[in-house]
Amino acid sequence: MNMQYIDQATAAVKEKISWYSHRLESDFQVVRWGSYGLPLLLFPTAGGDAEEVERFFLIKQLEPFIHAGRLKVYSLDSINGRVMLTSKSVEHRIWMQKQFDEVVRNDVTALIYNDCRTELPIFTAGASIGAFNALNSLCRHPNIFSLAICMSGTYNLERWLEGRWFDEFYYQSPVHFIPGLNGGEQLDQLRSRMVILATGQGKNEDPGESWLVAHVLGQKGIPNRVDLWGNEWEHDWGTWRAMLPKYVEEYLSRAENLSSQ
Image (cartoon, rainbow, N blue to C red; front, side, top):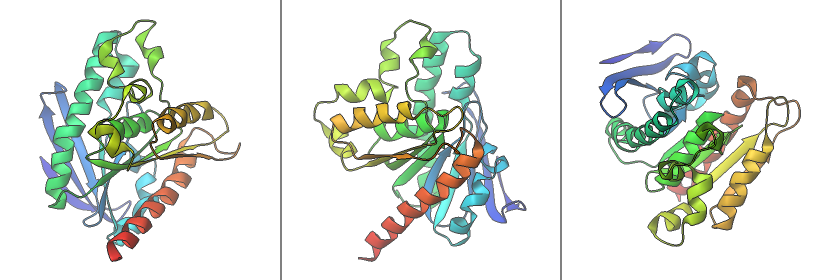
């Protein structure tokens, strides 16, 4: 079911697309804000739905780009994050992460391409577990995604395995599978992509997670940048509302400059 209307909170054109996903075995929703511009796939935090980013005013912060026709934002239900938090079965958590990646790779990507009427490069972003999803999407599918803006991320999810190990987890965890890449098209493509690892240093932030990813990527020649924000920036929405517009502006300006040359 598609619903398109003017959202009063942002004054941006908003469309909801929902369907029953056989891959996820549940209902699933994608929401889009904006009519024109480069596509951003914005992941919620763990367990968040597709409209979480609007309720916590991230969409409001991106409104100038949306209104200027520079940006279209897509967000989706964090089904995998919800299962990660609630499932008692490690096997089910890993299965859901794999299925979620398949939905992003196949269904969500096709929806974005169809909506944009062309296969534009998609950039992606997220905070907390959303940062993991942004990183994983780029690293697994660098033929689709051009940039990952990762804010206050948690990237090593081994603790969710409860001391066990599964090969399926390896292929859904960039800090594990990236070191095993030795040549090939995937690595070549990743070396032309970019990962921004932004983190505060205040309450509940862990910059060590960002430095871990930077080391893993750097060892393979994959461009990345760690941006350390100060001790006043905590693991919370206020931090991400400040971070995201800065990095979106960087990306859009660079893309627009390249297209004008």
